[in-house]
Length: 111
Image (cartoon, rainbow, N blue to C red):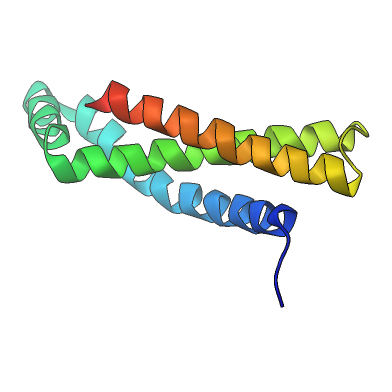
C-alpha cells in the first residue's frame, strides 16, 4: 500500500508534535540552567557551542518549523481552502518546500 503525500504530511505533523513535546524537556532544562546562576549560564553557553547541542537545537527548530507549517495548512483547510485532492497535494508540497527552506535558513542562523 502506497500512502499519498497528504497522508505522509499528516502523519509527520503528528510525529513532529510528539517530538516537540519531548523536546520541551530539553528546552526547560536549558531555561533552568540559564536562570540558575551566572556560572550556570556560562556553562550552558559553553555547552550550546558544541556540535551536538547545535544539532539538537537545529532538530528542535526543524520540528517546530514543520509542525507550524503543517498546522497552518490544517487551519487553511478548516476554512475550506484546499480540501480537494489536488488542493491537498499542493498544500502538502508547499508544507514540505517551506519547511525545507526555513530549516536550511535556521541551520545557517545557528552556525
